[in-house]
Length: 255
Image 1 (cartoon, one colour):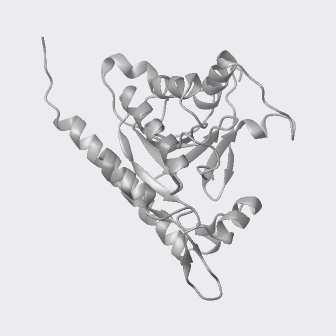
Image 2: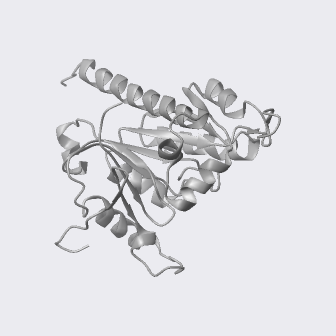
């Protein structure tokens, strides 16, 4: 899969975005140099989504991925207690106020919930699609449904739902343990007419790699979980291509 990927984090907000063509009345929502924008949401915290002035900010870069995070702009350990207008100003600075360069995909990790911040992000960025992340248990899936419905209300296409922490495979006996339940996200996808993108197992390597700043797809590129991540990424890109084709073949109606 080819393309340039970028990432930014706004407080508890992180995600990926992919640029797309727009109608004339939405040109002002585009970010220069970005083709499409995708938001990653869960509706619930703790399910594992995440993994300015006139001078534009320069993003941090590692392993070919650029990142902007509020965590890098405030004092370590400081609490970010902001009301809506401050969050929206930070959003503007961390999207249009960053020198992203030319890229194919920008991933925006949405904060938990479906309130003003989430709706404003969906409306003020020209999102090409939304990606729902959930764990298998019912309480997480209830919030995932709310996240999906929020995207629908603001006319953001849903690229699908993926199940994180699907199971834990014992390193000794190799038997899977379905700690949070089994098949919940797949069932939800079927019920809501969404694509099911895959199951990501609960593995120590994901946690340790995240803590050390070494992605498991780099440290263990041939592992099962790295292959799963690759397959999910390919499905997301394919979904964007299908949406792009639908847009180009949609008839123009003049009244």
